[in-house]
Image (cartoon, rainbow, N blue to C red; front, side):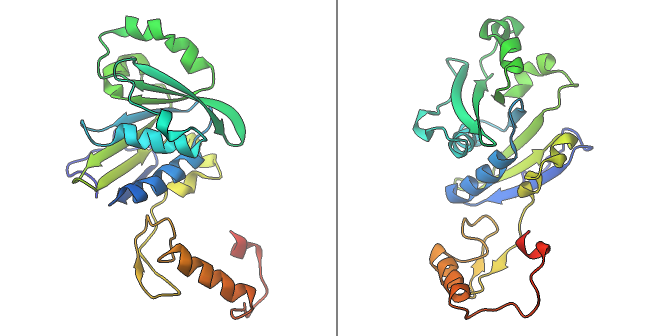
Length: 226
């Protein structure tokens, strides 16, 4: 569910595509993305007006321990900062909206060098307005959000090669449709209960293992836990 005609900003970067048909699906995608983030990361958020960039930032911030009600678009203040938890440690998020940026002097006034050097996760909406400052050498992740319709969005994640060394990087990989092992229903890849049709179905399956209704007919090895 990616916008037709989309072209990768950097075809050499690892790229992941995800599709959302509801806010609940987007929450799952944001949770997976937040798990990959580390202090000092720079994220370019690309998408037309109304694509859902600020909503995505809000959901990612929430996954990092920020009260979602405090996250708003910094269109007029230009930048918001939020304390957060990154990989189990105290960190911070710098959220910029560059739509109204006039020139590089405004970035300097915000203390851009400090922001880029203090270990914050930097999330930038309308990054194309400051690409001359970001430069081609900056190892940034680009998240392109396509507004498919009122409730559906397409997400494309282009991540630096170095991110692939992170244990959580493959969380960005799109899952397949599944058949719920309890109800037999088809389950959307971005369902929070995947591969089960609901949390009730998940608990029912867990109960089956706990009361030994289900058993493994071979010795358990390390790959089963993975």
